[in-house]
Length: 185
Image (cartoon, rainbow, N blue to C red):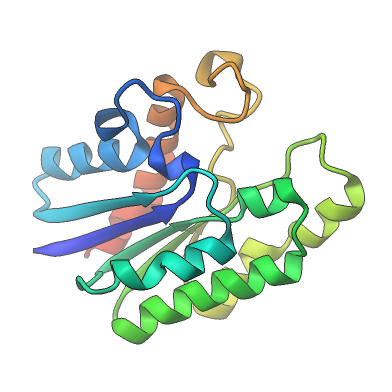
């Protein structure tokens, strides 16, 4: 059976949902896989608060099981905490390299993130091109902005305005599915 590893932060984990095991976007992707007759297993390795550095440190424990498709969604917490963009880029590249070292045939989908409008413009410039650069360098598929159709829509977010609600995750899952399905063949 083929395996998809979703590796990310609170947006992957399903932070704030009443039932993340059924409402997070990896769970919704799992349901779509079953609906379409794909015989794949998924692992939701989302951890709230994770940064690219802490993700890099915890990655090895998820690589004992073969990974056929790797979905990487880290970097938002790096941006929010003001980490150096070059460190985020390096960590994302190293995470992908470690997964590729375990399976050269792995297909990777990188989930891009953009800075919220309240982040100072000087910091924004350094993060603007991280995901495109890593995707080009590592030859991955790229969803440029995971929250594209969710951010700024109050009805799709939790009261914190940063995390999607169950309806928001449906929008995210649809966007991820469009990028993910071609990687399953």
